[in-house]
Image (tube, rainbow, N blue to C red):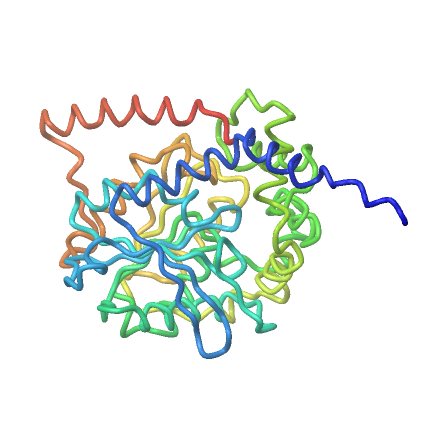
Length: 354
């Protein structure tokens, strides 16, 4: 009789490696922060076979109508939990009800459809929102970077649903010719894909250097490799296609105007989507928009200036009767909040990305 095959050691080795993974540990922390804030997960199947994973606010679970529903759309290098975990409690405390999806091919969301356009992403999010129990008829939308492209298409295609818009470092006014003109740190889409979907430690180091105004100094190679293994190896083909669909043939003349009041937030030292794109978007939208420039911030505003970004979002959405309201000045209480918020930002921005 042939000898029985030797037991495989791959599975135990993989389980042991996952137990020691700092990236998986942080991922679990972010998930716990969503649950502890009262949000609950839900998977919404769509007629075309797509599935959109959502985190729903506490009010949605009880059937109550939230006062200020807000849809939060993450950027390209993140999932919903990694992007929005630090913002949940402040937004809830301000009376906002966050609906937080994973975009298609991120997190637990996927689709069998070949369409990779941000317009398709927007259609999936809108359909999933409409299918939710006790879904709000109108809601504000906040989109960060790639999520801002989706938010813009959502506002254009579904104006009855989108009440107002916050676009954070979202280069929706870019043109494909900007790459050859030297506006960006990359020369073509392939180079952009190698950075945004890093498979090598040197690519991730370069990405962090571009996205942060003050890049973290402590980034051990073992942590970088672990982050790439956990966060950057799924749906690489599909995400690469998303990038090509985003940039290929893009022209400003093809970008429609939207009617909603829009707050544009940009890091003064953004090297992924330079500030010129924020100014270009302000000119494109005209009087229905306002551009806020955040000093000492790069593309990763949500990591470098979380308290300031959260304040801007809260102020803009909490009172729809005004174009923009900044109540950050003038009182001793707000001065103390500024001091505490500044300290928190220093602590947060000093942490390594991984």
